[in-house]
Amino acid sequence: MKILQNKHEMADALTSWKQQGLRIGVVPTMGNLHAGHLSLLKAISGKADKIITTIYVNPLQFAQGEDFDIYPRTHEADFEKLRAAGGCDAVFIPDQMYESGHATAISPAGVALGYEARTRPHFFGGVATIVLKLFQQTGADIAVFGEKDYQQLQVIRQMVRDLDLPVEIIASPTIREADGLAMSSRNGYLAPAERQIAPFLYQAMQDAAAEIRQGKEVETCLKKASDNILAAGFTEIDYLGYCDADSLAKRETHTQNGMLLAAVYLGNVRLIDQLKV
Ligand code: AMP
Image (tube, rainbow, N blue to C red):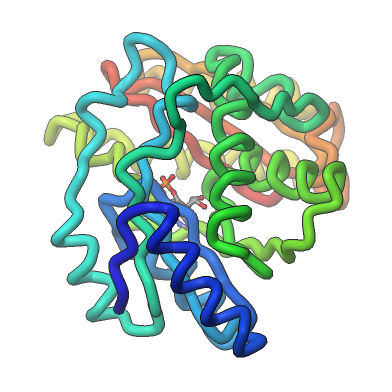
């Protein structure tokens, strides 16, 4: 497994692969890898000739006061996990992505509005900009994203469509702990007592989904789930919404392509989750 530490090393590897006509698959991550990330690697293996995992904690998608400085950087352990998993030909781990004077950004609207963007308006512009740069630098022909960050997945699909990027996007399902909690690097911030409460988010979403499927009024189901989430010990609900899984437009009644999206706080820790209804 090659370790490529800047865009020049990446470009050298890419030149030789492209000369051989190889198809490049990319798994973008911020590192601190867990089984969710490794499932993306598995999902893309067999769909490309060379697979690159990227590790970069992107400052552009963190606002002042968010966890950029403390975000876990566990590079050696990440390399070990990738080696053990197999199927990763290279790790692209640039130390910087924005040269001095960088002044261009992607500004997504459409599916990038609402939900995450309500409290994190900077977020999807930062994500789209770094993902486009990573696609350019890695020569991605195909890339995989987790459904766990469902709105992000839709923002990337929209960008690829709108800007005619020659990259195939595939989605991979959310990997969960045994108790249902969606795996996330941010779960490591949870205190033991909070970790006990955390799985209840997914439980409440499953209960709401069952009621919506039975034809109950969506607003009533969401209100009940919100009350239950707060009663379980969560500090605040950022959003809990029911929408069309493609457009993310709000839906008031049960629909074929319905999806629940949630973000909640447990103390200072922000957890997100999603569930197809
Ligand atoms: P991150 O390192 O958190 O930016 O995530 C990198 C990629 O891994 C994104 O496409 C995420 O959606 C995906 N991912 C993170 N957690 C999970 C999970 N529990 N299951 C599946 N994919 C995940």
